[in-house]
Image 1 (cartoon, rainbow, N blue to C red):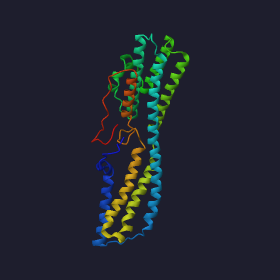
Image 2 (image 1 turned 180 degrees about the vertical axis):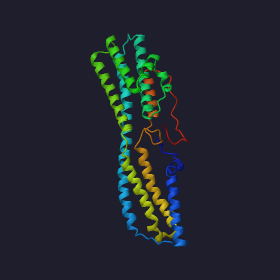
Image 3 (image 1 turned 30 degrees about the vertical axis):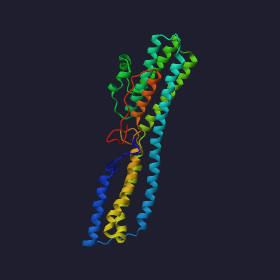
Image 4 (image 1 turned 90 degrees about the vertical axis):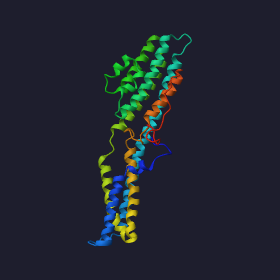
Length: 304
């Protein structure tokens, strides 16, 4: 996730450097040809690129809105994951806590909490296709780790272990049937959130829509120098570069926002959110071994 400050211009304009270079060379060649060679004389009324630019602006606005909706939905879902993770452990603590609680029960609560922390980190890594079991090994017992490694969907396997532990708690009398139902409802909400993230991840933004906008944008750039040449002369190079850069930046912004789980600076910061979950849950069970503070990555302008 990009931070509010210290975003370098090299990151912003580095995304469109190839397009800007192409536009600069193209506009320069047009200006040189018009000033020195006059092999051909092409002049367009300014209204032609203006009409095309207006249509292109509407298309880019629609695409940007749709991309932002995907990004914002992902952030909402992870906000729900934070809330449901806290609710789950709060319910476990309140439903099972008693003066006569045994060491087995305390170990069960701690195991359940650590598994939920592993689930948060595991879901984020799964969405980014960067699953690293070593990063969640310390939160799971060897038996739990062996179980989840048999599944293609590691977060779903962890939720299955949650369900089995709730059944065990019910059989042991640590929770009653009504409390078990409430806990299972919280697990269902976590499953729903996981499914929503997977839907966003696996639903590809229409490629043809992106391709047509990109083609229209380049067509607009190719026409623009001929319309500005008579008005600005050689300075049309700078005008064309400035105008086209604005359009290219909007297009790149939409492309980055439409995929919020691809490991980019514009991502939903799932690792940072999972760390927040870890801190909250460990404090709830009295664990003093808290993770280190989040530090921005890559020259202090984004966190993952």
